[in-house]
Image 1: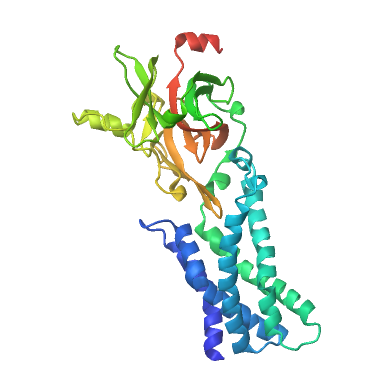
Image 2 (image 1 turned 180 degrees about the vertical axis):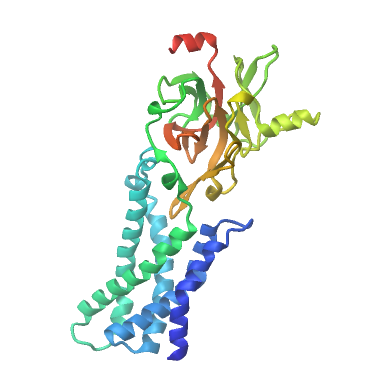
Length: 379
């Protein structure tokens, strides 16, 4: 009995330790999920068996063994259930909608899985009740009670390992209220896989090129044009190593990524544009308040930046249950605004105002500044 109590009291400490395991081998959330599925269910089973014996007078050793089995059963059933639910189109909510309702979605996920777990482990609770009176009712109440207590540990556990600074550090707003109007965003539409351009506030979308099915493009990039001061628009296809010249001399106000610029400075030829963590900077030196702007490999790394004047370090990301949103292909425009791909969305982030807004659904963005005639037209 003493050993069981020691194990019970150690559960909170064991559960919160994976949140510290943010290493190069992955993220804290990845470690937390692995720990929960492989080892955590053992400790949860012990806790739930102990609670059944204390609250509902079930036999301790008997109930612990059954509830350990119950937790591994619900884990396996949950994996199959999630895979099955993916087939329902009603659950395929567009990311453009989820973007504005992330907190509500997280709450809904936890509530849904609490309800599912209650019913999955109800037969095991029924098993532990033996020949008690009102066995069905008591076992259902028991399942609800012990799952509610377990989730009081699981929710803080997963939240401590999650990265939700996208909703805690910035205000999600309409980009028309703060986005600079000095740039075009070229991107690949998710609707038809063609190339479009759009303004930073999400207005004036224009299809500029149709792409054949056999030439489906993964992302866009630029290269210096044949004429001095011009840029060509290229596309990197889903066929490894295959590149397409899309539009010659499409802009006079584009730039290479920081990674590509350093390559040129070393006197080396430009590599294939595979470094999605490098940033394109379209600001003049005098306009820069933020530096070291980059996107990370893992969803939890998100987008980070450092204020050159105050030394403030800023990072926003989203990695939580069923929300693994990668940050890619960042471009910085005057006003310290960053346009980048977040999951399958193109967003604009104002580093000074700490606001972020949705421009459109798409991938592989390239950003150019407006030329003089365009500035006059859009005034």
